[in-house]
Image (cartoon, rainbow, N blue to C red; front, top):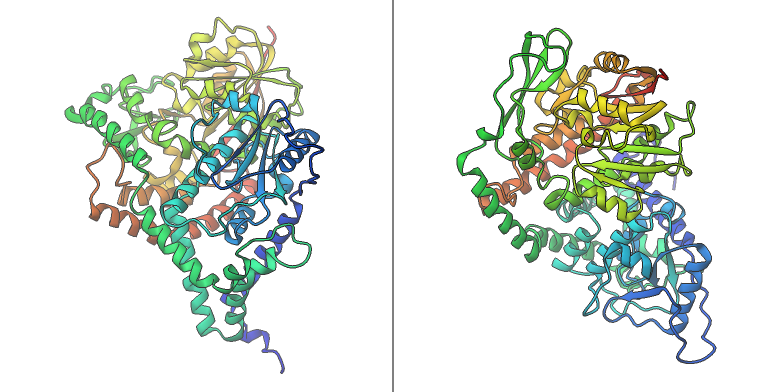
Length: 622
């Protein structure tokens, strides 16, 4: 039979077919890149446990001595401190899900990558367990608990965590988890169950539509989806032997539909009982704080510019808290003389504590950590900006958070000692993880005299805009740097064209956290006043590709805030339904925004004009 002409190709089916084919090939390639333990029986029964190692398993998983010894030998031979073991009979969909998340060739060396595994057995060095404070006691953990532990352990062994297939290990339960168990496992891996279920349901609906309406091309796409488990995991030479491979392949559409519906239903019931109890406790505290409103969180409005003293002020934008949906309305004013943009009236110290709470830690800590962990390219660009100018031995990262930049920058500067400073408890966690050598907790100006002249580099990445007195922060940097040292700064650019286009939903306004947005010309002048010479300035490379995606996210939050937020009214069925409806309706908008952001990023790099800028300056030798 003559194939149909190109003009009759149904492009939706062709795109789906190409995407599924690429995913199938990728899964097979990744599977074969995972090392397989070489298991030999122990010389004698009762082989003692090698010192310094623990093997943690879920209920029903019983590793033998040969598997344990082989895992220890593999970890020591590869220089690993954490090793997740994949049972040879791992369920097909669980295996495919893991292979979508993990590229074994890059996993170990991705210092910011999240810890992933099968959730059945993890070999870990005892010193890593001790540093992480995560030594489990009591009954064996559930798979969700072990997945969460693996994710945490990689933070303490960023370049010493790996995967291996254990031929002699059986997971004991080949079926996929259902309902609440599946939701718990997804959340343990930092994945949004509701959004994933919605995406899966949408994908199944699209496949059904093309199979029914687009002839052979649609049938080919649906057939490839149907056969994907066997094509990726089966066949001769596959290192895995999923116990449910035949069943998972034969009934894949129905099983996937049922799993997505159950996940969506379980996700709609909110978090775990423990999460709800914590939120209830937070709600009591928030209600007590909000009895008198939020006006007391703001200082009196100032009549002049904090940068140049001019009284020529005009409102730039008024915006509520679109980040968390806490009550309040915030005003950013622009100076007509120097262009400085600042929050006016600004938050009090009590107000800052209120609006920061549960964003970088507490309720929102996990989400913030996930976002920071995905900025590896930005971190590398910041670190590489110094390459033509210095080879530093000491570096202080101010506003370090949990130390993500310092962890990533070690790949560029392996000999450099990185220290971090921040107001939050995260800097102590960064020290325990080994992401910074020393963590200083407090206000930077308070440490200026103590640390005077001790550092060759001071960095302030998206930090100055959060401070109450940015000029005082620059004074502290000048004091801490040794003569000839380098100060590197990255800031949102208030002169970005996207700020005018998107208005209140331009993400870098970031209200109410951002107190000051400094034009590049103002920063250059302030650095010169403090004895610095600007060596380099970058705009396009500093661009953060989130303008359109952020606008959609902020708009969705404004239309339907999280119904379970403890500072809001008690959640109702109507509020939950509205939130789910808005999130579902926003999925196409998010997809379109991602495309627009990719185009915008390419344009920013070509024109050297983005939504942020970096500046590198050297402290002059008097």
